[in-house]
Every structure is written in structure tokens, then in C-alpha cells.
Amino acid sequence: MLALQALYEADVARRAADAVLQRHLAELDHPAPLRQYAAELVNGIMQEREALDQLIGALAPEFPPEHLSPIDRNILRIALYEMRRGEVPLKVAISEAVNLAKAFGSESSFRFVNGVLGAAARQ
Image (cartoon, rainbow, N blue to C red; front, side):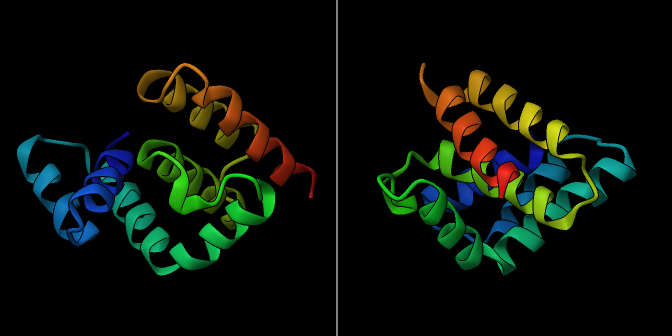
């Protein structure tokens, strides 16, 4: 959720994601492993953002990434990044993404996110 907050704000406000994350980390006392994982996610996603967006476009060609809501786009980026790294089991990455979409997205976000990630998992 921390990575999603930072990526969303950076996306919408057009700010540097690492600076946004550092501000969020400074506001609350988060455990070191959480801080490290959030930083790895945010930095890795920003480095691979173009490739992740191309993958989203390939998996859901009728919904180009630039036309998705910033929440859906960043939830997909996080999950696809985790899936590509292979450190998080596919089912866990998908489940966490769907839960984020239910919590922060529109009424239909979780179905869309689940469909895109399901297609990614089948590849």
C-alpha cells in the first residue's frame, strides 16, 4: 500500500516517485523491512515503467495504460513487477493487487485488475 501511495502521487502530481516515497516514510515509523521493500518496488517500477506499461498494453489492448485510472495503472505496475521478479508467488501478487483495487479503485477495478493479471499469469 505504501508503494501504491507513492506511485499514485508521483503519477498524478508528476513528482519524483523516490522523493514522494521518502516523504511518506518520514511521516510514519515503518519497520525496516517494509521501508526496504517499498523502496525496492518504487525504484524498480520506475526503472521498468515503460516495459511494464507496454506489457499492460499488450495484455489489455483496448485499455492503453495512459487511459487507465492512475490507481488501476499503478496497481497493475506493482503486481506485474512482482510477477516478473518471481520473488512473490503469482497467486499472492494477484490477490494483493485485487485487494488494493477493491480498497482504492472503482467498483469494477478489481475485476479489471484480476483479468489483466490472470492473462499475465497464463503467459
